[in-house]
Image (cartoon, rainbow over all chains, first blue to last red; front, side):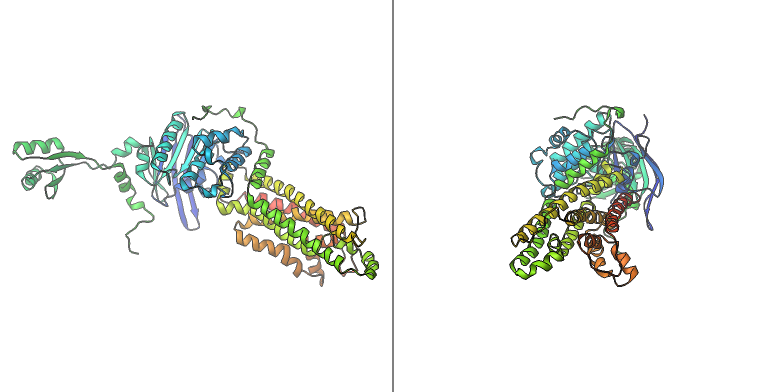
Length: 305
Length: 278
């Protein structure tokens, strides 16, 4: 399958600051690709370059084989929600969408369709200035859907949405991908992507850290350990340490690395030690993400400078 | 509620061609869907016509029978059809309206939405220029026409009004009407270059109002530079019988100034968005 978004050695510098540095990856149709990175890692800059809003300092980016900026009209090729605030508060939702549609030769009926799709039909004639962030996100999604495009880009689309809205957006993304479209969604929270994306592109400080399936990503850097709760903590700890495990004890709880749950349970049974709880724990995706980006965080708290 | 099934891979050939008229229609939708647009036009119209009517009413109320001969000889009826103060006010208001068409997008971030939907940025700006030029020409025609009708109607009460057929009458109406699009396009161009609301407004006031006051007819370079400004071109066109001046110029020259400003403003707006980010 040919990639739809093809990014090669993409670099963007603003004065002395490098926002994106030699980024190379591809995004394929038929699945949801998550675009992850901490705040300020270059996600939005990359999305703007995909859309031709910012010119790369170096490298290339094409959508369906062509730089997006070479297209006279965009909405039927790529639908995008960059920032829900990129609208004029003085216009109604309907006028905003109708102007976008009209410029792209999209029939008027489509405006009502997308407004119903995102659940804003009742407020179509209200001024956008009075919309909540969640409503603006829905309006942004409506404008992305307007041209029924094969490629969709969303920058942090879940911000400001209530749990019902989050579920709706996830289902929508899955459906769009199932229809064969390319869906590329940025986020700075792994937990948002965990139930949405099939594929992940992770960046930090403008550089690529990982580009792989969610399954591969979750297998990466997961440090398994066995959690044991036992009234005979000291005895078991000594036995496990003798077997070569590293044990961290905290009251009745032991955290064991270097031995699997089966072996721990055998040793406990052999010495007739009571065990109340025994479980294998793997690091979450969030932890894997944190681990990967730990030294690439641009703005981190708790630091003295 | 589901979307229409997507035709994938997209059949580009079946899509309607990208037409410039669609962009003009889109910009017209944007322009008319802002309440502030109509408030600005209405306020400017009332102020301009009000200013002119006020001067005519002043003449009417202080009229003495011996005024009739100099009034007719100096063509004052036509001078009162559209006064310099009203022209300055209109230049400023319409410059601001033109600037806001583009600054309003940059200030709210709407420009990103616009340019992502239509990557052909130059075409977007050209469409904006077309809409601004057409709408403000209509505005100018209404303002100049209404001013002429109201002022001459008031003067006619003293039997001193001019009729549209009088020599020079059509020229002052036309020059006043067209001052509106020239100034609005200037504002549009400045907004494209500067992008920020405050600096654009300051620049618009400087170019349309302050410069014409500074560049006086005292020296040749200053006179020539002054003549190249829209407000001074209007002054030349609106004066039915200019007295002797140090550096005279023709009405043809003044019309040319109008045309050059309008075309240059469009060119700046179109070129100004091409090379820059977002």
